[in-house]
Image (cartoon, rainbow over all chains, first blue to last red; front, side, top):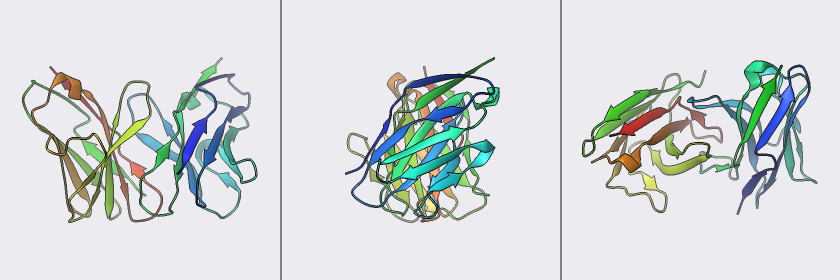
Length: 114
Length: 114
């Protein structure tokens, strides 16, 4: 069985400061891991994905995430937050590497202040 | 690439009527499509998985006679909410996959049943 834990339901940062959104997972297999972002009343947009290639994954809009197997973590980071980054972020696991049921984290709401 | 559209983006209907929501993959062939429901400030709940030309697989607790899913082509899946009631009001999101691990999400449909 697989699970995803997003350790913070809400994160607030000042514009221009670093962002860290934490995600831990458990999976019986070698999973594919994703971060999606959802702006209010919108669908989910893929930020980045890890599929057993490089452990440091670069995504869109300056985000990146590092897969750490020993810590079962896949934290999302960005060096400098922008106001437009304010949104809900979901860490997601696909255990099989195919088009199958995803396991979602509960989400982290990122607030960016001036 | 990998764009998924949904139509309509918002719909208001009377209790007892049926509503059809379309999900289209615009630039790829979606062998598998997924339908999710999202409650306010919550993560996504998978309702069903549909493979082109096959019957949908519903998650436990989802009424298949109430939420009719059709995936007649590689670019189109539809969700019909039959005899809608106020408790069916929600944000419905589809996703599509070409058979690999990444799902691409539509922008969502806000359903309000009066």
